Image (cartoon, rainbow, N blue to C red):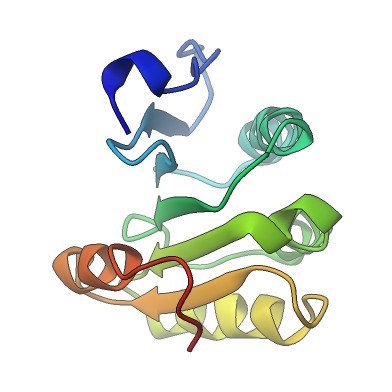
Length: 141
């Protein structure tokens, strides 16, 4: 995807929000979370759902959760809501974790996500996540 074709991000850093996001070269999103407070997750939820509304093609997203030690129940509920949105069927999502607790929570989210929805991979190494994301989008696990 050329720079001219990349959709605008429409995201501006805000005080007290514990994540950043940038557009990936392939047009997807690269999120880095530093906290999962309710304020952060409310902001992320609104941002993510807004961007899902106009999801018109297959997309690769990367979530870097390596700075997160635990995903509380409310974080899991937010993630389930977004991951079960019908437009996530167009998304390949790599999640990079550092703790077993976060891996287990992401696996629980994946198990409760609507079948045929997003394609999800969980990794501890960001380079492995990038390699997985770079596979042709027509391939399924």
